Image (cartoon, rainbow, N blue to C red; front, side, top):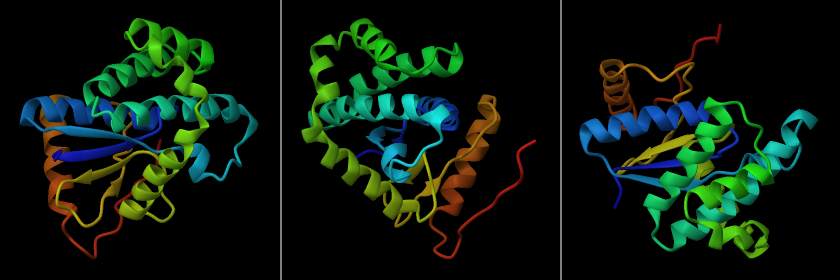
Length: 193
């Protein structure tokens, strides 16, 4: 069993930064991460502002590949795939669409899964994974959801403007570990500048 489950939607820049934070923490603390799909298309019931529709719909198709890999126990492939997509989309500003996804599948050696993008039979599993994320940290949350092993409930976030340096990242993880078991803890928040 993984030390922490990270439910994610590749279209979300906040989720990307949280994933880079968690990856840094996992390397420092020898944590095993389970990557699971969380569809913002599902969370929003398909009701999206027009400027987000194409990337979120493309991301939802990519989550079919993530789910197929998860079902096959291929967490390392999910890690590589998400890193490649995140770097192109969130670090370099390339719009998330089917062309980018096809390129990333090629570059990560996963081109054989291209047909999975259209495999609607995986939608129920993506929806179930999204429901598990919402059950862990919801209602009213989005991507990402973080669920440490053994925790009854998870947390939405962290929502980060940038990935903190290692010492701050580890301190943030320590705070998350301290807060998660507190049954009556719900939220800490400050406005974004």
